Length: 355
Image 1 (cartoon, rainbow, N blue to C red):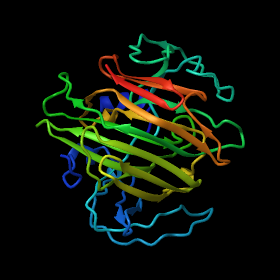
Image 2 (image 1 turned 90 degrees about the vertical axis):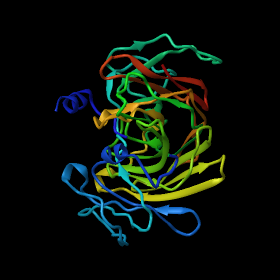
Image 3 (image 1 turned 90 degrees about the horizontal axis):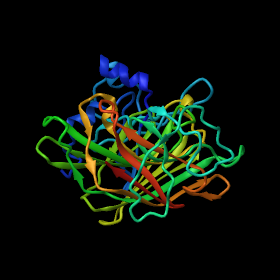
Image 4 (image 1 turned 135 degrees about the horizontal axis):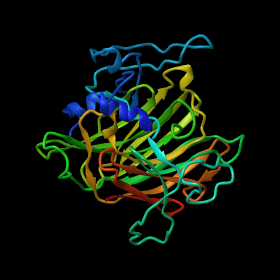
């Protein structure tokens, strides 16, 4: 999902358990393109993207096979699409809404460009943690950790992965009883400080006005719509997620429910030539989906714990959270209170706490 700028958010404000029955709110927040996954027979899903979307009045229709297109300098890449799965498209946001940035990172990253805005330092409850640093960048939708630059000018991140447990969720009293509340957990490449695109995959949790919970596993090559895939979840399930860039315009995503044993492998290509990956960011994120202004509210959640956090470069080197990761915290647009705070526990473990 995009980290929307504060100005863009201000302008917006001014102006269960089964994927077969997704919440309408999830449909509304998707934008730009659309795609639908299908099965290749052994659990692999394939997607396709078409131009258009909510902002251009496009409505979702019947899906048919769409052949792959070879593209060059004068045309954009296109993925193949397959039908027969009733899924919904959405657009997770590419860049976080930054309202402040630290003058120093959680760990020193010599290759990172020094931020020029102010530092936000907060008092964080470091339960069962060996970490004492509390510097983080305030924004309106991303909470987590980001490697903001590749370790060398010749290196690019091509693989990002983590395992997380779907936490218990509690609707917030401040939200309207008609609001759908949600939270998203994902890993991704690019979109924070680099590039016009992001390759990401994860799981959303939704709680509707009847207090019913549903889940959506998805993948997305922003700015194309995200694509929901069929997989059952329950609170407490352990999920493995990874994205791999096989080139700057093609990638593979994996979602595995390690509690149920179901695994899906998805493939996508960049929706346009300008959406090529740069491989400069690696991300482990809990996201507030409310910034799209579509009635979603961040749902309260127990500690979100990411383990096995790893990013690999094209040369096969592995990097973790202690290799210069910057921290991002979510601040509520209306109350200005910080709602979700990250903490690096070790080089491979990240905790994001709702407060």
